[in-house]
Amino acid sequence: MKLLEYQAKALFDKYSVPIQRGVVIDSPEGTEERINAGALRFPVVIKAQVQTGGRGKAGGVKFAESPAEAAKLCRAMLGMDIRGFKVNEVLALEKKEIKSEWYLSIMLDRYSKAPLLIFSPRGGMDIEETAGTNPEGIAKVPLDPLRGIQDYYISYVMDKTGADRQYRAQLKETAEKLYRLFFDYYAMLVEINPLAVDEQGLLCALDGKVEIDDNALPFLPDIAACRDKLQEDPQVVEARRVNFLFIPIEETGNIGVMSNGSGMLMSCIDLISQRGMKVHAALDLGGGATSDRIAEAVRIMLSRPRIDTVFICVFGGITRCDEVAGGACMAMKKAGAAGKRLILRMEGTNKERAAELVASSGLPITVAEGIPNSVEAIYEYHN
Ligand code: GDP
Ligand code: MN
Image 1: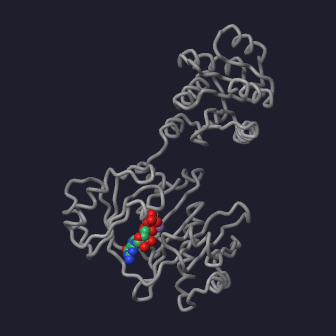
Image 2: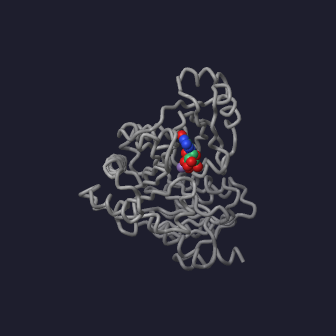
Image 3: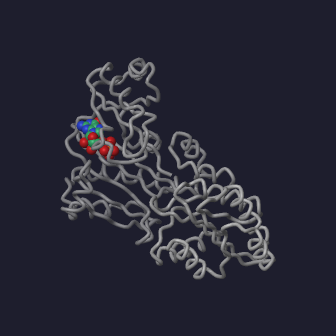
């Protein structure tokens, strides 16, 4: 789950990473009063709160000299579309005068199987460009998770990038706080870009990005509460309500895959992709494939207009295949399913009876044996 900037900064504040004073504005009414009530020192910076970076380049970061100007900018920004996200909230912050913009992050690195510390004294909006044209300007080091931030990590990243050593103690302190946050909140990423060096030579987080592992949300009520403010995929929300996991994959794909287990889901997606086709979304049914639940899952899948083929792959021991087939038929009948096809692969009790049920239904459902044959059936339908 990706937090909004002000939600990320609330966590920074909890770990006493320095941030600017600010107020969140969530409606165009009484904007000026609210800015005045925040008693902000001017000038201020007005920032669109959306779950994407690159706001500066997309018109989502503006400066204002007076409360009236700030209010006007807030009203203009609310409702705006920034890189596909609607702006429902803006953040007004006291503008920092700064000497330089650094980059600091810790991410979970699958390759080194460790938290990776990334630092650059050339941060800010052009960090991606720095990564491309001047990779020596960015240093990365995998952290030993049991030791956390050590002096030598900080020395290494600063020396490698030619950063001014006088900020060493401050950078270490900031990295330590960030690491504790990363650890305590099961984060996949905590990022400060820019981490500004202000006129007094103090570090301050001007921006904040935090991504939390969704699987940890049951332990993190404060983060789960943040979810209400986020723009989530409607099918993800709908599926979660009934305890399914819906995963959007490729926007341009038109196949929906569902299975009772994430490992098998991934195998199915791999095999479909290898055959040159694209999966639009996957759905993990979890345990207990009753006909009602299968029907509900197929309905959710088919509510994505792009999906024309649904592949159900259920591998069960005691799972009743006739239940699975019954649910699939029910959903296809309800959907009216013109131009839609369902490929059904199942293992378990009453497999033969299930196949008969499908055959006698007259619905556009193909029963296939094993995953490779199913993939071929999907391919045939598509070509
Ligand atoms: P992003 O483009 O979505 O990453 O948004 P940021 O919050 O990082 O803002 C983009 C850029 O605006 C930063 O890299 C800074 O150059 C500038 N900026 C944002 N806030 C301030 C501020 O308080 N003071 C100054 N001087 N510049 C700021
Ligand atoms: Mn930024």
